[in-house]
Image 1 (cartoon, rainbow, N blue to C red):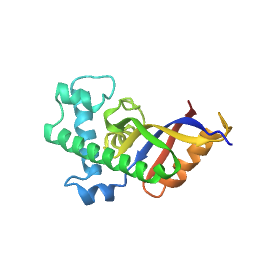
Image 2 (image 1 turned 180 degrees about the vertical axis):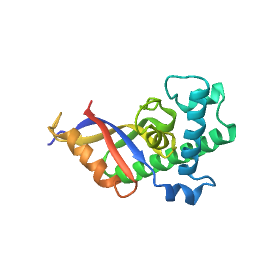
Image 3 (image 1 turned 60 degrees about the horizontal axis):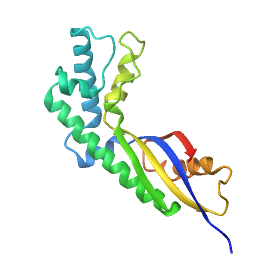
Image 4 (image 1 turned 120 degrees about the vertical axis):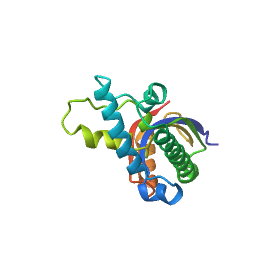
Length: 179
């Protein structure tokens, strides 16, 4: 009798949801919101002499960005997160015993990797503050014959890319490891 072993794989992904898909379901355009957020954030950074570009949470607490714009960004980010979770679960569930979402975060709420005097800061900031990129930390379990099969992390990475690439504008695997 063959003994099966449960292996857990940790996958971190960053997924960009197509703007057209979001616009079909939401009253606000993610691209327009990202552009306007960037404009107001750049103005607030200059006005307050901040030496970096903060995450959106900063402006929710400190002001400097229109509350309606922050609310639109939050709505888009929430919807994009929900859409990504559902699609990942739908596409990946047939291959794994379980899929658990450890975290789901809109990248617009993370600190941008852009500095105020950086060349090409504007397009990088617009891309960052557009609330259509979602970062996921997923734990997927799979039954295998070996206890720690070689190449399991790479297998999972290729499986995620192959099955999600047609659903989203971009699907980047940041990290994959067997637990």
